[in-house]
Image (cartoon, rainbow, N blue to C red; front, side, top):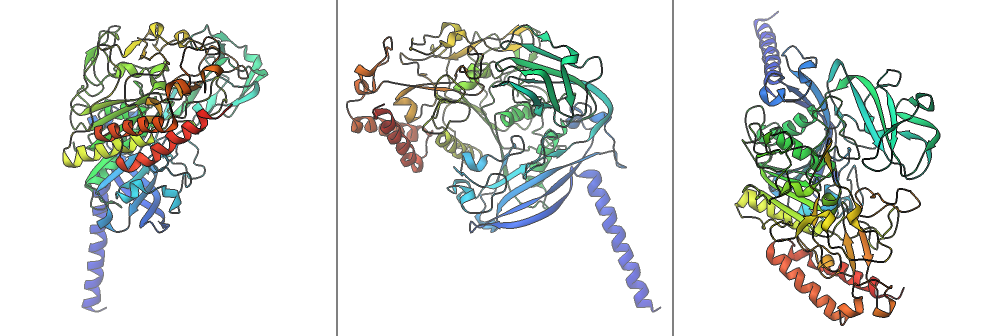
Length: 630
């Protein structure tokens, strides 16, 4: 063998050893250890590409920023004493780096889905796997050059149709009783317990049970063990589950997924994008967005201090927590149920600044605590009327003291916006009666959200202050006790004063809601043209109709659109609300008032000028529908 070939072999061997050592060093130090790309493809002719794969993590369980994760100390570790896990990853990025605005807009996927493009981009197709120009909607996000990112954070979603999932580590040998609650809309013999996907349940132990009650806080009565059976995650009941009654099932599960690692996955994916040169998309800033369940995730994420990575660096520069109310998520606890459709009972702290809990005496704040105080992002909280009326959301406590007796000014890095007269997710227009007693509420708030995203971007990148917070207050009488709400008597409409508020355990929480005018429409907040120039009473509540039972209970997450009469002659006896003809002298006058209101919204930063035509089209359609003979 020649001296040259021997030298070459030695060099190759040395290089291989160096690469191996470098990989070991990366695995020992980096939270993101690698990304396996499964496919890449162009998205239509948009100039964007999608990158789909799996992102792998290894985190130090002894690091104080990770030690807050419940049961992480009970997970198996690798040779470097790190806990390993992985998640699905999906990125939409501009192919030409010059088109990027340098911002990653990272959505907290709701139950494995993608919603950014439907809300901000008004997309009606594409859903889980955008592939065409149409799937990107009107191009609002892509024209601006955002890099759009999703990562799996839930262990309890099925990986079907492209939904994103977390493969969480397991707390081996650890067990807990887990619970699922449901209220059927019709009599059924069996129910799949979606809340408990991801758990292996044992129905044969002593603490397995099924109870039934009427209403949110009715007395729970046990159902005899011989009457029900569980196979996998499907529960059956002899005689069937009755519509309108609330059932709660409990069973013991063992070898529990460590759900809180989803918080670390979300943190470390964004930190990787911002700080690692090997990231698949290079950005300077990162904004987090989540709605409903995902908004509650973000409130939990901030509370536990996950906006600082293991190296103490800021992760997100901006956070938009949408329709979360004052609740957090069941994720960082043993036997967590992040997939639960009903939010867990709201738990102190509700507001950002530290205050004393009148029940426990504990002093705490969502952002004002030792974990969360460093590296705080700019934060927007946006809520609809539904989050004020639902007891498991209790949105008013975001901006009041825990006893509900005083207004609280948010920190300088926080804005709070009430989306007046809207429901959780807008109903289709024109709306119809489905499971509620009234037509669902179609008032569209997407245009407000587009303006607020634009304001967040300017706040972070340019230092331009965003629009002032807009929400009801005790001091000016726009926030009142629900039991004292001056809601008008409307024929065929139950009074919302019978609705019960939330509880934290056995403690009844203050139940404060936005005050209304003589029509029953709310007076405070960001009022869209639809709501400010109304043809109906738009609410954040809707009672269940007779076809699904429990008519004194609310349909979850649904508001109402209670139409005004077309003329005075058509008004029902007892309806004190003026008719449309009595309110507006003509179509032109109606549209002129709506247009003037849009101009004010644009001036205040709550509506983009480019979106005014779309808003006026909806207002025009609203007039045509309302003024048509019925």
